[in-house]
Structure formats: structure tokens, C-alpha cells
Length: 406
Ligand SMILES: NC(=O)NCCC[C@H](N)C(=O)O
Image 1 (cartoon, rainbow, N blue to C red):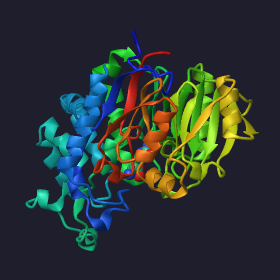
Image 2 (image 1 turned 180 degrees about the vertical axis):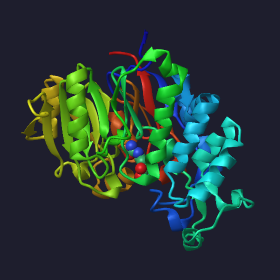
Image 3 (image 1 turned 90 degrees about the horizontal axis):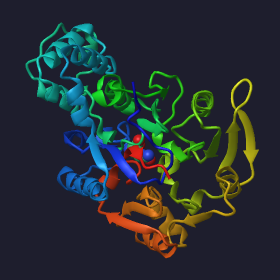
Image 4 (image 1 turned 45 degrees about the horizontal axis):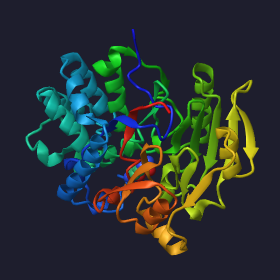
């Protein structure tokens, strides 16, 4: 068996392959009423959003990175009839239709569609108006739920490909999402992992699965180097999720240290990478508003689970685990509290390193970008006026599959 297709041993090695999702009609199904449930704060304009996303993809491609898209990989996987049928059953299982007759009617409808259309419905959702002639045995639940517009919810967060899956070394973590709004995304990744030739023709260890009980999301996982991860303990990533993944990595891989960075549990910084990212060997971006509330713990191999050691400060912890004489924590926002908070909300700290010292950021975060440049970082700006409305930046919108080793 060939060695794994995946290879990510750092946050900053030259990016060679990445998994993206180009925003589609699922975004046009957001209405003010369901924004909170679907984890959005605003309604993006899809046409411009897609242009911005295409420019983001091109920026990476121009620097030698191969781009894979969820939609294409899924379509290829669903070419096999038996996989398509299983996939449709799993999509339906994840809905709350609550009537087996309705489930059966929707299953039959989806089975009649070609793979491309099934994938589109699985992403865009199925609005009641999409299938006006659907008929099934009506039960009380159908009357009770008649005001709800969807049979299958759209999944507008799929373009934040960072969160459902994480490449760690040559293996994969298919993450367990905190909220139902994002569960189907991880199910997609599981189908790709299980059935796509990229994975079936090689050996890829799986360290975590979406069926595991404790939540852990990719925006919280940073691969600092070959032997060290940082994992945010956050609104989305649970302490038990961190222990479980760490224990498995300690047993099965070269990883022997996990730096747990606890941040405030709040919507504005739902993942570690919304306040802290790696820019270069010894340089990091940090939102100053969390500096005083961060707590840090080191996990190492232990007897009944990882050994846990509280550490005094993030800076000291990074020096210790990376064996560096000094590290530079560069504060976002250009030195003003208000600007820092405003730019953090617009993902100033969510930088994506595409090689050491070279990052992609949103152009709107002028003060942070200027600060990074003054510290010697090459900042490549992309437009993100629409993309940002989902509360994520370049790091959130990318799942690295391959990075060159440093
Ligand atoms: N890594 C990230 O911070 N991803 C951003 C996710 C935003 C999305 N609307 C969410 O709330 O899950």
C-alpha cells in the first residue's frame, strides 16, 4: 500500500495542496430568522462572495498549491450507486424529518437524481418549494412542522473547510462538531476518506472520527511542528475531546506534546485560530484582547491518559515546546483596543501561512496587516467583504492537505 497522500507537519511549510469549498446556493438560503441556528451574523451577497473566493483560490494556486474542492471529490465518490445510496441514507439520518414516510419519499426523490445533483442538495439543502409535488402519508408531526421551510437544511458553513477535518502528519482527524448545523460537513469528509481514490489507494491513519462523543473543531488545532500540536479549548472544542485526540496521537504518532490554550468561551472567538495563528518559525499573531485571559497546559504521555502540566504563560510555553530562545507574539489591531476588537471580529488574526513568513489575510484589516509587515511578514491581501460575514478568514477557509516539510 502506498504511503498516505496527506502530509502536514507544520503550520507554515510551503502549502502544496488544500481542500476548499466554493460558496454556493446554500448561502442564498440564509434568512434573518435562521441566522443564529446556522452560525451566521449576516447575509452575504453570493455573487461577490464567489469572486472573492475564486481570488483566494487563485492566490494559493499562483504560489504552486493544488486546489481540491469538496463538491468534485464528493461527486466522484457518489458515482458508485451503492455509495450514493448509503450517502443519501446518512444525509436523511442527519435531518429531523421525524416521519418515516416522509424520509422514504425524500430518499426515493434523491435516488432518482444523478450524483452531481445529490451533492448539490446535500450542500444547498432541500427547500419545501424545491419538491412541491412530493407526497407521503401525513402524520401529526408534519402539521406541527409545516412552517419550517426545509426538509433538509442548507450547510452554509462548508466554505470554512478548516473546521470539519484536520491533517496531522500523514493522518486525518475527522472532527466532531459542537453544533448540529455543521455535522453534515464531517460526514462528507468521512465519505471522501472512505471512498475517494486519493485515500483508498493509500494508507491514511484516522485519529478521530465524527462519531466520537466529544466535540473538537479544526479551527482549534494548530500543527506547530512534527512532534507538537497546539489545541484551543474553546466554545467549540471540549477538554475531553482534546484529551482523547492527544492520547491517540501519543500512542500512534511522533506527536509527544500538546499545548492546550484555553480561550474565553464566546462567539466572537469561537476557535483558537480567530485569536492566535502561526506566521513564521518564531512569530505568531495574537489578538491582545485575550492575552490576559488565556490559560495554558502542557499534555504529555501519561499513565491513565495524558499527563497535564499547567504552564505560566503562552510565550514561555511556546519557547519551551518549540525549543526556541525567544518567540515574537505580534499583537493585532495596531496598538488600539477598539481597532484590535473591530479587526478581530473581521478575522485579522485568522492568517493563513502559505510558507514561512508569508501569509494571506483580508485587506480590510489595515492596521493589523501594517503591523505584520513592519515585523517582516509578507502579507498577501485578499478581498473579503462578503466572505467575512460568516465569521472566518483565510485560515478558516482552508484545510491544508499537503505542506512541504521544513
Ligand atoms: N476556524 C474558524 O474560526 N472558522 C470559522 C467558522 C465560522 C462559522 N460560521 C461557525 O460559526 O462555525
